[in-house]
Length: 213
Image 1 (cartoon, rainbow, N blue to C red):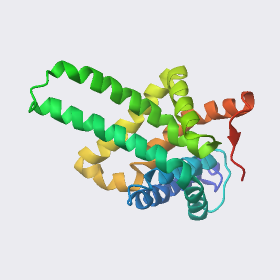
Image 2 (image 1 turned 180 degrees about the vertical axis):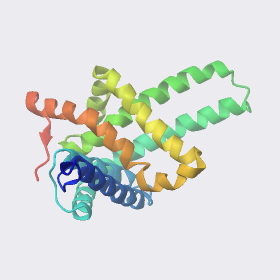
Image 3 (image 1 turned 90 degrees about the vertical axis):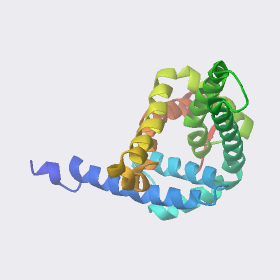
Image 4 (image 1 turned 45 degrees about the vertical axis):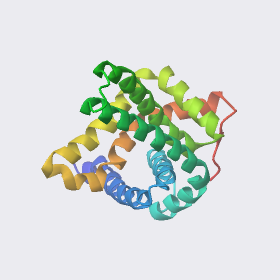
């Protein structure tokens, strides 16, 4: 019982990780506020989370800022493309459901299908940007391949991405938790699924190069 509450025990480790995720969530939200920098912020968050899981990395704020600057050039265009496509799909959805243009509701099917593809790619594109050096086209291609190749895991990640923030935002009592864990917590849970895949890629495929420390 005593070992349970030791500094290296599971309870203290869980408390430490939770406090780190809270801090990381606040940093991520702040660096997403300019909107255009959201991609770099998400990539930096994923990098720090992977470092957490692998028991590596330095001071959180310093590490986040370093990775944010590194990913600003690569992650920004990826984010702008993802944001533009997501906005387009959402606008089409709103137009069809409002029925202002007389568009038949059956047209929702391709819109929803495209939204699922968008979300599946989203699950991998920023973690890949954080983990590997690659061109934008190759990053999108790899994200699409992984989404299909590891479909069960992709579906679980999609549920985590949608359900956790939805609960935080729609259950009044949980709303404050969104600003504390709404982004970092589901991302941490997703990382437990995609990180083994990335390690397998790094071990079996020499094309993607892991970022140097």
